[in-house]
Image (cartoon, rainbow, N blue to C red; front, side, top):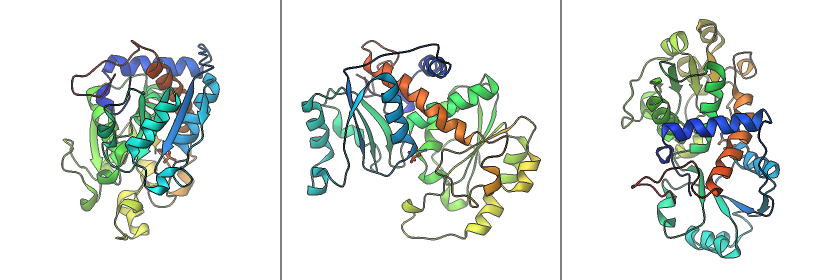
Length: 302
Ligand code: CP
């Protein structure tokens, strides 16, 4: 079965994955998938997602095929479909794909190999969303009624979309912060200013400014921090138990004052740590026939 977008999961399935990831983290559960082989196809750069899938595979006993866009036949023009079909023919058991094209997976529906989406352009990033949910649950033990502000380059962020919809249906109250040209009016959530977000949020979720998707148009980094970033002054306005999140990589001094990245209320490195356990849980479920993920009539779950 596949995990392509957060809508592939019911709320119950999300909670099951979070519980399983927590039991991996607390070493209450061990799963041995020795003998299975995976492939990580990253057509866009990655540190956290790729390496935490590698770490998760190490922990599960799964071996990985090596692949790079630059040294593979992708550089000779081979299509995504033919590349995935080849990896399926070689006998791999699952593939993780990150690709710049939104909903790239719609061209792969004829294939039988399980696919885990490691990020599709400005579309979705479901495995990041699940590790974010795990981190929030660790802090608050619930989603219902939580005040969540998602702040930054909303328009180009796949993390914003996966998290906004998933957290909303889990009961959180979602507000967005973005400069006008980085707002996404298709998202059905209100925009507020950064001072209000700092003042009343339980979760202040910052996003990376995605320069690579701006078509060469620049912005003023210093005024961005003052208007839309988390400054020291705004951090001091936050409620006692509120947390700071960021999917990283962080543009220090742009989305957040550099000194706050490792501050007591920052969960940024805890998010990365949780990424390993959530990906162990996702792989385990994707490889189990009849596992946790349901089959949506309009999804590619198999
Ligand atoms: N958060 C995230 O997806 O980071 P990488 O781009 O480094 O994988």
